[in-house]
Length: 330
Image (cartoon, one colour):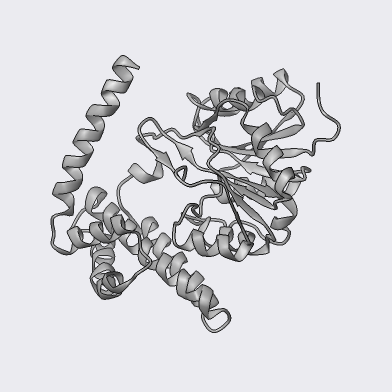
């Protein structure tokens, strides 16, 4: 029975060529005991059976609406859904991920108890937990934005956050960009009066071989550092304290993308040389930073001395063996 005192949550799920996952994702949302929701599936020009599966699911539950559109990318899909959403709250879910347990109820109750504008939570995959090691914490929007820039307990991802929808008034994701969350999430956080970071977990991610993190390194990956730098520049001279932390995020982005270049790139490609050159130029600032995570600084040191690729391959071999054991024995 739906509780009339509950507020409507708009669950936004962009869908593109995920025929093996989207039904599982949507059913995990429908299984939640929190019933007052609208589920907006945006079929972003899928070329497999994803769109048909969305229509099939819509027939099974009146809370589901489906939008079919030409392929325009993740940002455009989220924006289209935001434009038609009616909930007091909004939650983004990637269509190959899923929820477990009584997750929505816990998030909503926490939001009401704390009178929060945003609740940030962590997630798990088959082997690892992310942003779940710290206790419940209350933050101002500014404090949360700083922690986002430092990757300290929360990140820039659009998912894994329950937002009051009015925080997105006048803010939309940049279309045609990769890593499109960078210039948006901090602005939304800054609008919030109160942000709750919680270790409540019920969000599980799927790592796919054709996800963006596993594609060949290309010019698109450089957009992460470009957008991080643009955020830093936009704040410099306006809010120098926040600009300082945004610069730390820029250094973090350089390390992350240099990692990807080494793992997925071709040394002969211009984008690889551009990324590696940027890393070399930025290494003195990376080395001197007191705000970058220790693990990232260790990775930067391995990159500097040319041995990161070997270490990564050894680590990945061990990780893959663990994954196979989990799949084999459960």
